[in-house]
Image: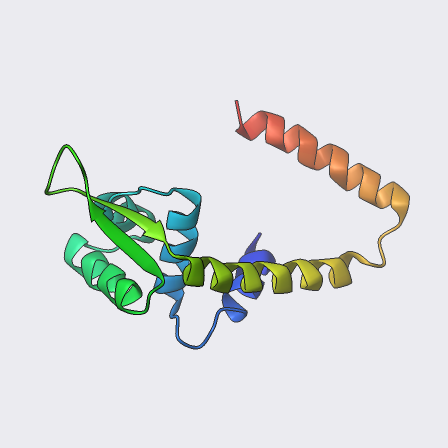
Length: 125
């Protein structure tokens, strides 16, 4: 996982720092997230997270809407432009992984697949 995360981060565009990239990834997977949820995930204070999100909004990578029931709460979403940047990073990382795994035999791949399925069952229960 560390290798995958490192590769994903290395494929981010120069306009994004690592906390911004992590924020985009989190919100893309958790559309409608609140600022406090992002702050908890990233490990920043609310004011720092608010500044980070403001910069992403200015860059047309994310949107913020007031929550319908609580005006103090915001709902965050990634824009089409933000999703395009994330998708480019994801595709590059998948190509990198395919290249790294190219030399693995069919039997080894089957063993890895079985192990991954077992781990999924353990961690998704």
